[in-house]
Length: 270
Image (spheres, helix red, strand yellow):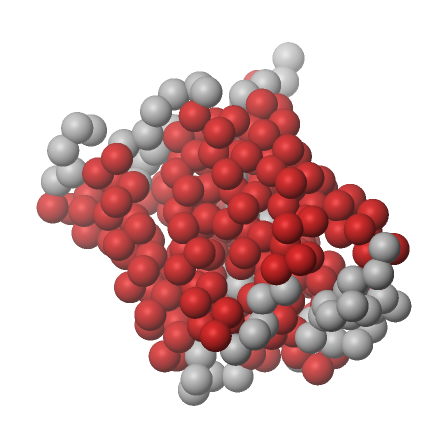
């Protein structure tokens, strides 16, 4: 796959645009779609798909940050505490993925998609996701926040490196429900954390092989287009509707992954 053909270029642009659109709208969903798109639509090996997913999601998150920085909805101190443990966890997650067969990973990933989609649907109202935390980590950041933030970062990092996801679907609820962040600050801060955390997972996966530079560039271009579209669409559609539509789409994809890979897992059993 040294040179991209017209069909593959189009599929890569479309895949990147879908990831960028979902990440820009939800702050959490782009990575859940990246792996199925890269594996099934672009026919990449799962390990290469994981590495590219982390790069794509990390860059997409960085691009999405601009608007949130301008409105003051990125809490840099929290991100800087969160990210080192996240990066370490992502590196270990990447190492662990090499020990598990692709079919098993995809079954586990589909289960993760279902859990996160159900959570997103249940907490789709932004009002219900605010003010439940017991700590004011968004602004004052007392010492008690360090342990909580660092521990959550490690868990998110392990998921990120193993599955090739940004972890925003864990970060956003953690920031809003546990640490009492307003929803928009949760999304903005999660984007910065995703950008930092992805670095550890990328480093871990690149130990096991390179990636196609042209394909990655095309995906990034598509993602940038999707983020721009997401910024426009987000002004007209409520966060509740966006979350429910994305949750339904995620469950549908998860079901397809289950039907495709569960029989393969059983076929491997002695």
